[in-house]
Image (tube, rainbow, N blue to C red; front, top):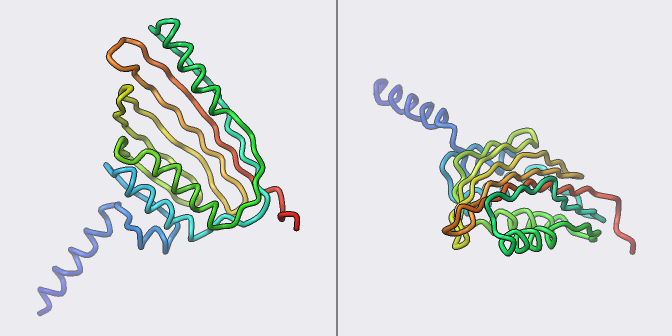
Length: 188
């Protein structure tokens, strides 16, 4: 009996040491630690972790900035298409949001990568995120990183991607920064 208990304890410790979080552990600690995970799994665990220290309802300002865009080996048509798409991304808006709406928008951002992306690494602890991913789309393959910080009243995330453009030698590197901060209570 002692041998069985000792073996079970060692197996449990080994499982804990594997470094992989679960949806339950993410909800209980606010931390996510994943390797080679689908965007769906990442979205589920990130949503669970955000419930540990949920965003506060109120008037929020969201700003999406294009930090850099570098296009190489592209035709003029390809260059214009990328610049037009990227230009549509940059914006600023104010919204009166509930905590649930904020959590849904966080999950929706990750969910938008579903079926296309795989996260090689996701580490989120103490409100800090560090991740890298690989995506395959009809437009081409891409890889990138997503880093940032998140609290109940603010979020700042930077995403850097390196993307191919179909069957051509054209590539582009894009860095976006998303800043969200709570401005105060909503007006009645």
